[in-house]
Length: 289
Image 1: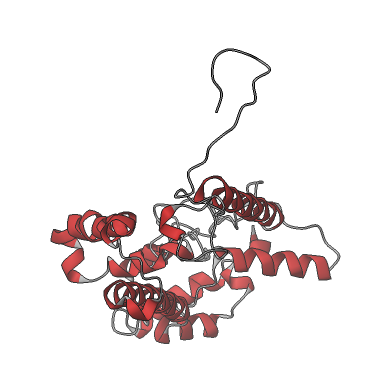
Image 2: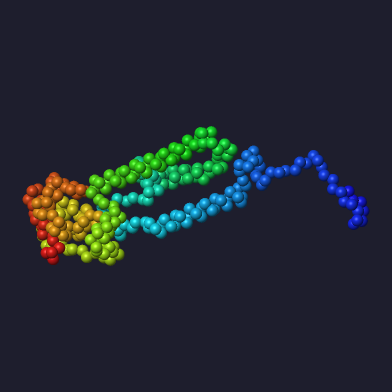
């Protein structure tokens, strides 16, 4: 110890042996039971998470640039054959909203109630589950809810996609981006220029549009799929030019028995009306214009 203000006087520090020196690194108190196996959340762990997030974000941006999202044809409100489908990560919710108790009169429950509870519980999980146990088999409630949610999402996604494929098969439709890819591939194999869908297509016009067979087509509800002007809509082709693709007999067979997504008209039209309609449609040739 020092006495007085003499600068030459020897200074002696007296320590208390009852206070032990701590050799622990910068570890929060909650993790002191795992020395050497954990680290401080801020800034050590958080910095690593940010770095991983940046790498994932850059990879995602490169993926989006390299594989742009396929664009469909321009929206057509008159296309009755169009099958609406969301992106794959919303398929489970799309299928969920098809069930009766979360749609129609209960649409608010399906769109706001149930998803709000699910995502709200996910956000509040760190505050609701405050236990220190991290092994999933020691946390039966949280683990069961998470497994149930994952199984439900996978199941609803698979069911929704299977139903979509079934509807395409029943209607005889090809997805728009698949159709464009096939046309681009055919053009490349033929040495032709890739189709430009930004340019308006030249549409063929009907031959003898005032023919009485036009009234028969309206009676058979052909306009429901082929549009009011019979020029087609969406993936449904127009009737102009059908004579270049099918003979009169083939057209009559399609009208009578149906094909792909087209229903049979044998119960709506008699044989004379089918023959008259087939004769008129067989005249619909682009070369005849």
